[in-house]
Image 1 (tube, rainbow, N blue to C red):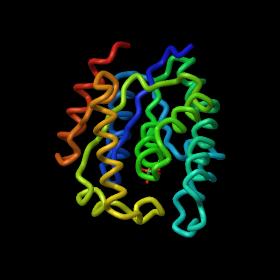
Image 2: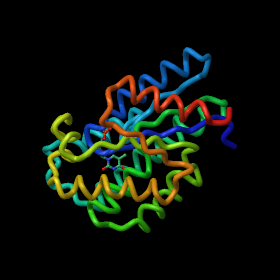
Image 3: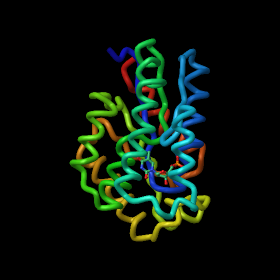
Image 4: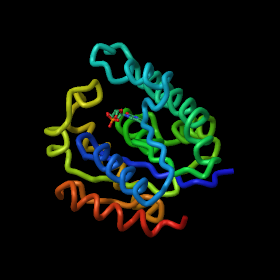
Length: 203
Ligand code: TMP
């Protein structure tokens, strides 16, 4: 069903993954590749409305389970409206965050557990798993110093340490899908490392 390539970017706050996603999109387009860029939460009109609720520091009443369900509501919409149609048309989809973020932030950070995240993933993504995930790893202090203040970024440093450790554990558990890229280097060094990994992917 999925002819195209599905590549996700993950990382703690302030990892620089969004900049790297854009650079990769440019490079792929220069190589003649048909690329679709999307993000989570967001990526669709509905998703952007959900993102506003999730990231607005004023959403203080939002409970962890509601937060998780909203992440997956945005994802379900993005999968149906953008990602699956693009893959079916043979395009390369670059997505800024995906289910690994829910495992790190809600499953581990919020303490909801991995099982409920995998259950929702089955409903929202219906077996869609990234072909490649680029985990741009950066230490929590460096990342938070670079980040802007959303509701998630205001959470305690201990929360963000758990998030980073969970990403690294996910990469250790699935090294063929999740590739760790050192986010402490300068932008062009990082993008060269990413290109080395992406150019090895089968067409
Ligand atoms: P971004 O600004 O890096 O795109 O990320 C949005 C915020 O949402 C970031 O703090 C991580 C958080 N997030 C989750 O907590 N769970 C998720 O499933 C996703 C996709 C993002």
